[in-house]
Image (cartoon, rainbow, N blue to C red; front, side):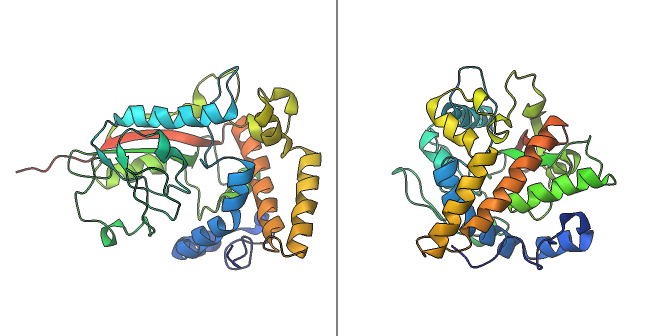
Length: 300
């Protein structure tokens, strides 16, 4: 793991209520350090404590946590209409969890272990794709006429940055998610249009009237867990779960079995988890703004 601390003076104020635009600007200017430092610290925690797919998802009654994650990925693939023979780029793929469930030939851009013969992993900066791949290389990200799909983390239009509680919730999610700056859903939509994409479908899936909310694994209410492994996922966010994990990580770090600051990374994840629940209940945040957009065909 990197020695970069997740909550140092360069990137986040120790007191998040004192965060200002200058801090967000600093994180944006240094996004490579912010993102690399974050994932170097938390990837093992995600893999062992969550799943190989680092995202949230909708839940059906009687559905296991892992099944929900897989269904969320399949839904995006279906919306993109992926099919055998297509060449697809998965930007920011983490450790490549979803790639084993895709029927196309994805090329994730990240550092990860190979999972399937049809998958190639490339380490690079997804803000500088032109330095890694030729223009018009992929059916999904993106030849002319190709399709772009995303589940984006956004603040909703109910979020008001002039309200201190709203602003602090956003910063807590940024801190625990390694996100330089969370932006409103409307700005995500505008960004797609600004670069010329034609939006074919968009929806905030968190607005669907699901009986089980997307944030339930983070609530720390084990009574809501539906399967055996789900109990462990939910237990981690209980008071006892956080307490025990905190001191286990501190002892293991002290013994140099794991990097000594792993407990600090875990603490920031717990901060974000609490903020996600509050922001989710108040409909101030969504982890699943779905947008399907198409790159216009070349004009002769």
